[in-house]
Image (cartoon, rainbow, N blue to C red; front, side):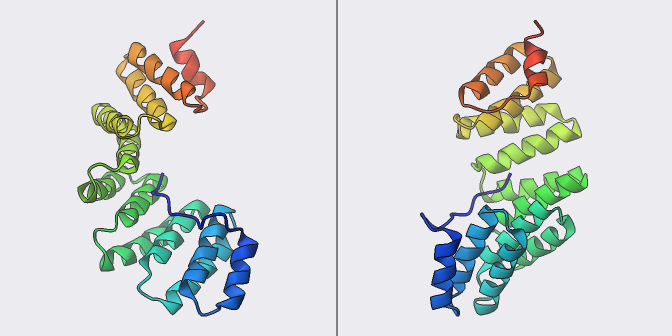
Length: 207
């Protein structure tokens, strides 16, 4: 999970295309269209618009961050890492770059590098729910369950209404053999509308 970039308010792709036609040399017009296209899952077109924005405004690092995010969606993890590293060359404190690198390493199965990237992100913002959630996932995959519980628990503290954090914390508690706490967080996830997997439900409600 990555930090979310704001999509232009109430603007359709068609509206933004019209804006771009009127302002073809506007970096922000290309950037906003790229955001809308990425939201719609048109990955290649989105990358093209972000690249056009960068050509017009090379310092628009948000465009490169979004290219990295789209590449993650496409499963092009090495290219995503490359783009994120370029961001961090200019802005070492740009948390999205660290998160994207961590997620890419998670998908590649290089979990120790994923943890390092997420820890760099956490040093930038110790109160990022997204970073704690990702660190929890990484430690869960590594089998360092106590650390996983810590980070999922922190994510829940930061955003008690986030069902995925409750769900993942329940999974971690099950690994520790604490079915009571697992059940409590499963119930909270369900109450928040999170689609808890049937097997997870069965693990705390065998009957």
